[in-house]
Amino acid sequence: MEVKKIKFDKHTVKKLLTLLMPIIAFGVLIAVFCIVVGAKGYKLDRYIEIIFNQGLVLAIVATGATFIYTLGSFDISLGASTLFSAAVGVMVYNSTHSLVVMILVIIIVAVGCSLLSSTLASVFKLPVFVTTVAMMSVLSAISATIITKNGGALGGISIPSSVVKPLDNMGFKIAMLVIFMALCVFVFEFTKVGRRQKFLGANPFCAKLTGISLNKYAIIAFVMAGLGVGLGAFLTLVYTPSVTPTTAGSLGMQILVAIVFGGMPISGGPRSKIYAAVVGGFSYILLDNILKILIQGNAGYGISQIISAVFFLALVYVASLNYRSKNLPR
Image (cartoon, rainbow, N blue to C red; front, side, top):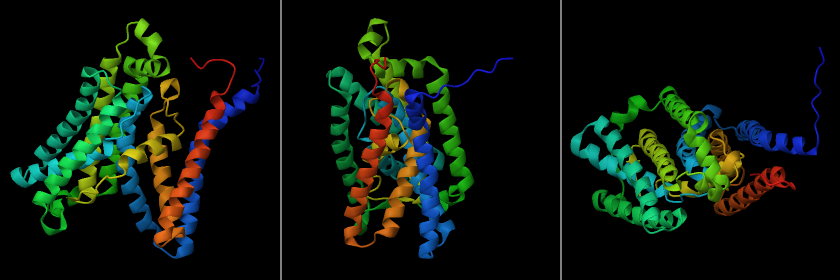
């Protein structure tokens, strides 16, 4: 039997490097994190718990947002939607004292906010990112008003910690991540939804000529993103059963960085990957905490942001190596 030899030409090596770089970087960051925490004499198990809880919300919301980014668009209002959903959820629980009702309301509000952005873009024929920027401002303002009005002197609102304490464990949170990931992978990889969204992201003009409706699949994308926001808002309350005006404040930009860290092009299209959000989300949180441990003090924040930006640009450059060819990618 003749064994076929695999030819590793320049293009193949670049493609393999592009696929493996995010996973390799994630492994390196884990190793560096463990070394840094050990060298500083901190408790590794405590820091791992912090990393997991921070990365969990980012990974889940970014996973839902992948559907939007696949279309070649983006939603910068996801952080404000998470804040607004959590704030409404707290108010509902304090009125009904029902955890089930709170969860349902959080998810409904999150999906509703996402659909509103998509609907406004369709009605007024505006780019989606324009409506999401407007939504970010509106939702942030409404959330701040709700929290300030009902939060007392400290400007925060909360639910009793005993309500969510039974859910604040690694097993439950991992189960939520796995279930949502499985749902997203199924929709994205095994249904026509994912295939057509990749087609729309790659070449919307050709997709329109084949009869694929951009509005229809944009709505589906925003529904999936809304589910991620709702679940992320609920898990935020599980970890910290209180909401302040700064809750999830930087989540919108973190999602963009996380998706790129995970090896997915921000232009979307056929190279979009669901797992990029999880790998990139935890990679970003690892890098951020490593820099915070190493560079402490007031100047540390600025330096860490510069280093994160350089790391971000390096990953974008490496990811673009596979796209630079004489042949069109679509």
